[in-house]
Image 1 (cartoon, rainbow, N blue to C red):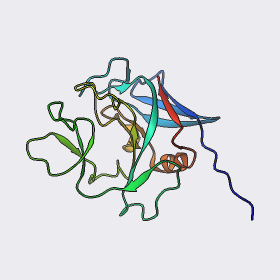
Image 2: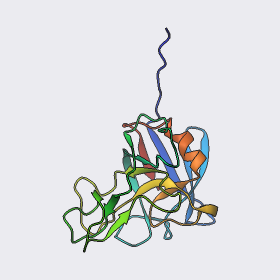
Image 3: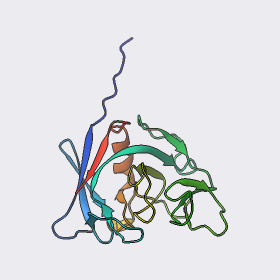
Length: 181
């Protein structure tokens, strides 16, 4: 029996378009994939709520998928688990769980619900931004996820059309880095 070797890319790059800093291109090998960026484009000094996508080189920590929207786990070498209805992400700079996953509800704590009524988090990857060490107020919940229609801006994430993101997952692994900027 022939063994199939999965090849993952080492680096994917994101660059803003010249015409609109809120939109970009994700470059992987010879492929160019359109993407949405934060409303303020790519920023060098990211702050919580600034609407910018952070400039830098980050690994992809893994992520989640919506099992009710994607009944089969997408193929990838990244750690990927099904989202649960009570999954959240802490964006409260005063809370000890800032920029970490958490369970909802969390009374008195600002957190983003990961189980969304739209399809943005059908597939969501944790970009290793502000994670080790975590600096409060420097930005949280920076993900790669599904884009809104027309690639409307994100809050600071990188967003791709769902079919593009699912196709890209096959080429991503624990050693893949995302370079923004």
